Amino acid sequence: MSSSPRGSGSGAGAASGPGPGLGAAANGHTAPPAAVRTSVPSSASSKYNKADNAAIAAGLPSALSRTETRSLLALAAACAAVLANTVRRDDGAPLTASLALSGIAFAACYAMIRWLGPTFVAAGIRGADVNKAQRRVLPECMGAVCAVVYLLVVMVFIPVPFYKDIVAATSGGGNRDVVLHAAHVQRGRLLHRFPHSKLASFLSAIISLQSITLLGIGDDLFDIRWRHKFFIPAFAAIPLLVVYFVDFGVTSVVVPTPLQPYLGELVDLGPLYYCYMTAVAIFSPNSINILAGVNGIEVAQSVVVAGLLVVNDALYLLADPYPHPATDSHLFSLYFLLPFLGVSLALLAHNWYPARVFVGDTYCYFAGMVFVVVSILGHFSKTLVLLLVPQIANFVYSAPQIFGLVPCPRHRMPRFVARTGLLEPSVTVWSPARQPPRPVAAVLRLLARLRLLRLVADPQNPDVIQETSNMTLLNLWLVWRGPLREDRLTMEVVVMQTLVGLFGLFVRHRLALLIFKEDNWGSSGY
Image 1: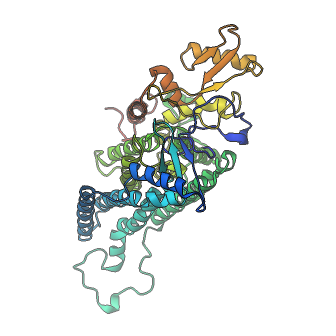
Image 2 (image 1 turned 180 degrees about the horizontal axis):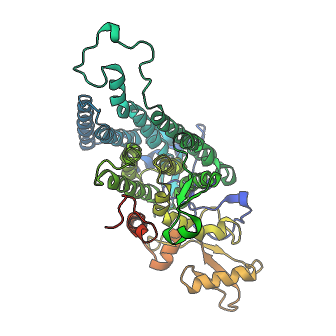
């Protein structure tokens, strides 16, 4: 959610403020951006280009090693064989096919990231990783490669879930042993019983993902202002909301048992429910973009959320008795999540510390929209909210800076200390002439007492604030834990995200029995 220069060790502009759009003051002594765009025209000096090329060669070999080539080819061949074998199944084995395509997506994405890195650098799409003693220039916007591979794989997959329906409509009701005489063959439109609503869900999901990918690429290339791009995910979600309205249309929510004597069992929110889903569609892509600033954090948190959603889907598919009424919805979710995990793991292999590529804003928006797609069309948006609690906490904690109550530097990622090689919280500097209003100062001091902020006061005049740590979850973690190496910070935050997500699933599926008559599996007890 920032403008250039890039504000993340992964190439996303995330740990940044809103920029001029919300009137937040850019101020203070902060860490330099972790991925600074260095777009250079072709007429630039050859010396600069040679230096860049040397940095790229050191950080990201453009050619795959023999071991990598053999491993990727073996994986792709095995997955292709599994995919070909699914055609022999009467139902097309869509889940198996999705797993196979996910493996192919991993191999393709891994290879293309390696091959296209120098091309991106030559086009000026590059950034400097400043959270290192030696700042290397790396290719940026690799999330676009990830998104394109993903979209192609999902498009190839579209016929697979409908294989059984196509066979049923074109070859004797699905029984290949039935012989039809020419006089009895139905003429005209054969797919009158085809599940068009299900196909509409797939197509609307692809349209939304394509739209958000274009937004991300545009942001990476043209540095769209925060105020201009913040609400664009809502427009990308319109196809999803239209299909939800036509295909499902449920806007009622179950009332907790203690309140049912007063409100009844259901409350119809009507248009407010669509406002809620729109808010989820806006928040999810931006939330991934906000919680950023160090190598690997954007992709790692997305992999964790996707993995937890896969676990959530598996709980329904393994429910007893089978099938659960929501089986189709959660199969739909898996068809989109498995390829996403495939391309994300390939990207994470290159973006983990020390990063060899930056993901750019494209990946952040794309990943967030994948979660929106599966949660809205899979009808479990409230579960997604539980899994995004760390991102929600990061947004709430950042709100004073985002909305201009506290000066907001353009980039708020942790500050690299070359002497120690560790990251420390970045800070906003307050001058004696420009102090926060008294109510804001009182809140800042309270947060400092609660160890939710690092505050440095003037030794000569304790009433004067000299600096405060920037309000992001990564900086807060460093306030709690002290200076950390970049990969250690990423790992600890990812572990926290995993634990919070697992607890969220427990709340959704089991603790809900404390206030609802039934859990998500339709049982009234363990």
